[in-house]
Image (cartoon, rainbow, N blue to C red; front, side, top):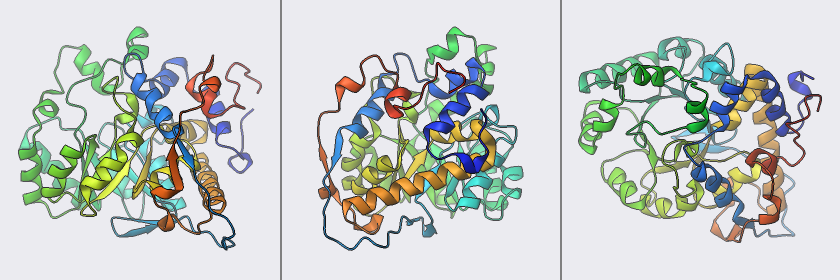
Length: 371
């Protein structure tokens, strides 16, 4: 069955509807990772290796889930992350995501690898959020994009820095499924040559030329975080790109504390990678994150029903965050600190024979088309 957007009551319902709506190739593109998909699994294992330490007998009659991101107060400090080829999930493409974020009250980061382009998406909303660039040309190309994004009204600019070469996403390769950029590579071009050549000097040059908040997405070590802070970057975006790039990496939330410490309050720290529930968001905020990026959850919601479904998913996510905060004994995300979480082994018995989605949403039955 297809759900009217107000009928969605749980997040796993969006996953089920997306599975019904998407062809197998697009479903695999959305759900899959690189090679053995070990990094993708570790993203979830790292989140599930954190348990809550709740406090009681505190007045939690009023709970606020809002937060500040680059000086903007958001209803929920989450970012609809830059995911490529979002037009594969919904006919409106990136416009649906941008409008959903604005309607709900969170941020959206437009990927340069999806349609429509930056000007059209900016014109579809009152206040464009952020633009993310995969470098596909020389410095003149980058500067042109920088000028265009600022002219279109985007309030921040992001370089993805953890994708120097194309990864091997074997689910897609085995089916010969080729998103836009990989079609060029399949045809013998090398669209990644400029991304592979990107260096700290290029970031420094951009920072010197443009007066716009700068974000680096793909930071995974304290060492690189310190370089970014010294360069004056405003936001460090901790990400392994959902396990879709380097296989056998660490889970994003697992490296978050050391990067928060390295930033030392001189830059905001954002994180994505496996975040699918409100409790996931709360764990990241307890470890010091300023915002959480949503990639696959965004894809599932958009594939389930476009902009209205995305807004509803954010409403449910917010409800989950508020429940977690109240049960932890705090009234806001700002009250959280590392004392509210502790490391534990994940629950291995629940992984046996289950896919990652079945583990995340135990009520989900992808094999039952009638559900």
